Length: 446
Image (tube, rainbow, N blue to C red):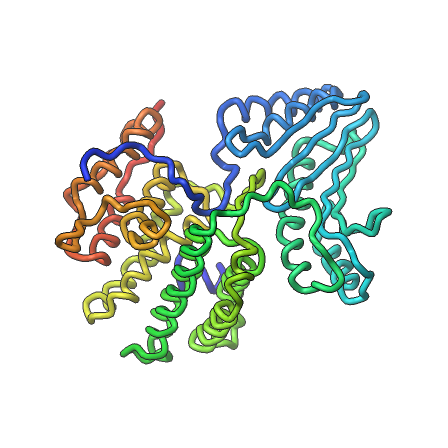
């Protein structure tokens, strides 16, 4: 068990709504039955030596119609394909001998030894694919395999590796080696409206400054209560990742902070680690608005990085962490008390792909707790009473009921204990809301 796990634990009628902004990272864990049927066909065809049919079925398995993320067709007796992952497009072909896939990452202006050495180092981290230069000195990532060795299992892991590495490394390399590299093949990026970029930028700066102010000027001794400060910082990390959905430098900064906590050096105290994380956030808000805006775009995806888990993993997260908020709540530290359930929700959405009822209820948490942010995006919050400043119990119940009714055909024992919710304050609602989620019976219908 890692150090991280030891510490934090293994206006009237509302209609169903589809938010006009995307939240959170893409997950490929919620595929439709026809996708799984295509996977079975791919395995059967591969075992029978019908490789072309196997790969056609494999790409049908990967395709998400809502994302429009995978395209394939037959041309000149070859199966051609395109796979989209974030800012990168993977192109490839299957002929009677092999499959080859390639993604262009950046166009080189000059071959500097610094970034060439970095690519060699990155290649040592890859299991299936490799960074290379094509005939035009375009930086690419490549994977190829003979058909007899290219099972659907191998193909999935190989394409996921090259897709996720290409998507991450293009922004990082372009940011680090500005003079040597320039963008390539970014026509499919959909840049967000300026009003959305502005709302996300202001939210990011405001949230970071508020947390730093609590840490630096709050009543708590940051050394004696380092665990509480850690919850505050981690909630900030995963909340920004979910609500802002950043790309490039900011995304890598948040992931680096996550790695620092999860792989903490044994000889480093929690207080020292918190101080290091605060420095990361200060560096982040020093960046210009223009740099933030460059990394705010919408793209399709094919592969997710979240881990499929059952309801029991969410229960474990709640049991291991929720009680940590009690002392802070009883002693008047509402922000830190709120950070504990906030951490549970945001970390679960960052790392896991839980059952759909859990996922939808966890997502609602942010609608209840961050109304100002959604208002800034042009999404009015019906869950608060503007006259009293309290919660709109009626609309909260309707929102939760919609989730329960949507999943009841699959989870026949799914019932939500509304009477257990405490609306006296935000931390109280957050605590009792998670306790209610913990109590759910997610047994599937026979």
